[in-house]
Length: 395
Image 1: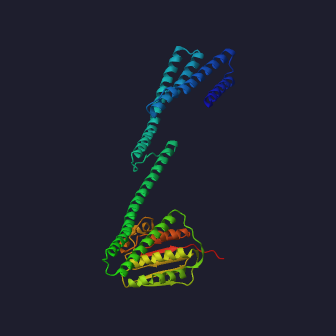
Image 2: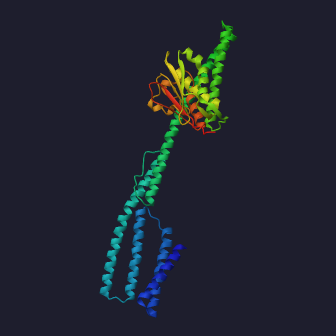
Image 3: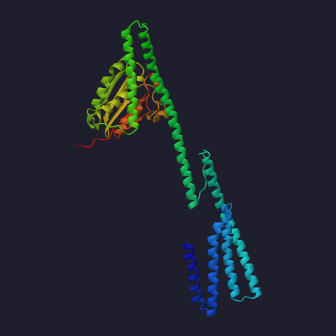
């Protein structure tokens, strides 16, 4: 419909220009009108029928054919106009030669313009086919500022996102395999000990039943703790963690955590020290922040050499900031961030070999981020983990 309106508008414009510039007689007006109408009908027929019944194997061929048809319409218009003006044979010959020359130039120009366009389209198609076969390192390499360049840029951005998502999925799968392997070991060890103890008691081979019962109770507690940690971590990752917030003193929570872990530290000959500037207020869940501090201190105790110290530093710096430092092997540079990811055991030097399922840092990060805070590891002589809670607005 729009094309028909366009053709009609061209005819009206041509006739109007002819009337204004030439002031034709009645016969000339009829002839011009007939030529314009015939050319418009011919152009409309070509524009409507050609793309529906003629299919090309390449864009370059289509562009060249369209250019030739366009120039051909111009040549036909010029020839009809020359016939109308009763040119001599010599004049007609000159006109035909000039029009043929123009047609040749148009053809060469169309080929020159269509070639880079077709080459860029081939690159885009090849890139799409390579991506379809799983090659995410390929890019189009098309640098244009037109719509084709925008399409190529969008394809390259899509490949970048696909590559990043694939790499992330690969890392997550590897981390989950490692996580499941670690959890399986932590479940298998106490279960095997429980089975052995039960069989010994059933067969009457336990020389000291109370000691066996105490060992079984310890294994059951370890299993319960592991299940609780798994449930808490899954709740955090699902975004369904709910807790009550109130004004708390983070320094007091640190003191309570130290007291709870003193027996463990004494067994390992580790001194626990709290340093700070007094009261450090925060709007937080006391149980949750206490759990974070205990996880970090317990982790530091596990990897500290005997006779060393674990220092808990609590400061009011744009909110509550807590740093837990030990004299252990610390974190490898490439594990500064990965150690806090879910399903990641952490630095091999701070692995399950020293006890625990490797969930402490992941749980600590989830609890801190649930408060709108952040947690990170810093390079130090030993291990150093810091978490920051947002500043509490004045009441």
